[in-house]
Image (cartoon, rainbow, N blue to C red; front, side, top):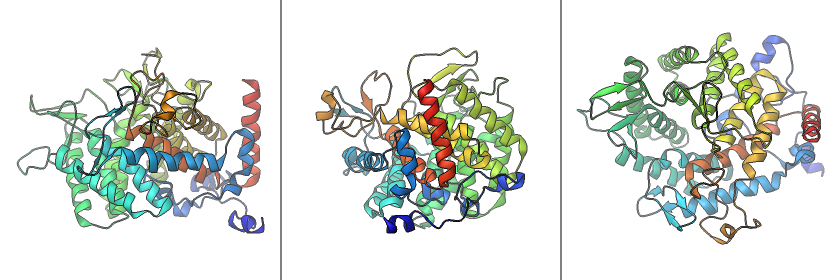
Amino acid sequence: MRQCAIECGGARAPGTNYHSAKMRGESVGTNFDSSRLTYGVISPKDWGLERAQECALDAWMAVGLDARDWEERARQATYHWLMRSWREDLGAFSGHYNAIHHAYEDPQLTNLIAPWQCIAAYDRYGDGTLLSKARRAADWVYENMTETHPMSVVVGGVRDSWEPDEVWTKFTAELIILNLGLYLRVPDNELLRRAIESVRFLVQAERHGHACKYEHREEQWVARGWQSFGRIIESYLCLYEVTQDSRWLGRAVAWSEYALTLQAPDDGFYLINTEYYSTDIAADELRSLTLVYELTHLPQLRTAAERFADWHLRRQRKDGAWLLTIDRFDNPVSEYVGPGDVPNIAIALLRLHGVTGESAYLISAFRAMRYALTQQVTPDDDSSYANDEDAVWGYWSWDPPYDYTMSGDQITHFARGIWFILDYLATLDRQESNRIVSMLAEAQQAR
């Protein structure tokens, strides 16, 4: 017990505030030192967070957090489920697993995101084999899905799996983040070269009206589509952090200013064909505005982030989830939830809580993670899928299940969500934890 008190900071000084809270002279009750903040998005280590000690999370048991169980879920999601989808012969992760037909798809763009889980798990467990798989998956994407010919006007861009004539900014930004995440852990200059090569594609997209994609068939840039400004901004910030070259921060700020023109009067972002909100890209929109605010202190960026976060708070379901797609008139497009998007939004809300100290954002993130637990198949489930070795510890792609598929990108956000929230909550001082736990308990009783 005494050792636990030492490890959990029994002699901690009062909570160190974020720089934005310091500017207001307020305390947000956290021991997360803002001087160590970094701007990556893959792993808690990218935020300067240390792995949580269980005893630092005792207060949260009252509202359903079992730190040991949550850690085990993320570990099994990595070592059991994700590793079973690995194709050693190809050096890549399989596409979707269909639990009805007991079949895996061939590798596709899941390999942009699934390696993030390997990198975050490497940070947690120190297992170099995970980092090796992440590198091989990045190589597979570069060799199979990326424009590399010197004569291409979109060199560095990543092609869509289903429409290979289309080269997307969204996918390209994800590859930049992956390559830089690897570079920070294995300083291979080839990874940095690839990241800069891909950034040039984003520069061209910005020049062509902040285009979402380039279509080879028509030889033209297209502004209509998935305007995923969040991932683009995050990729620029990662490159700025690695190189300390201010022009990349300048590009992130420029995209942020463009993003402000896209925010609707109801505070949402409807970025699919200028008509539809999607949870698939919402987390990056929120997180990117928060991160650029932290670097620049531009108040309009913080205001936009808070407005969008509040938009989510107003639409969060009682079970903690958000609907996958909503039109700009607030009409649900379908009944479905994208389960992996929910913990990714939770991570973004954690970052904004750190900036603002607004308890509602942390409460929303916690509720989102409790929902996420319901979408993982565990051995104790009363379901036939619990007996399928390729499904157990996996994570559904859709809720309701629709086609009963699972994928590496969805489970990556789930595992990352667990690691981020555990490590972030452990930075709160005990008084702040008790206060928020009491608010959560009261809200549970009210529901």
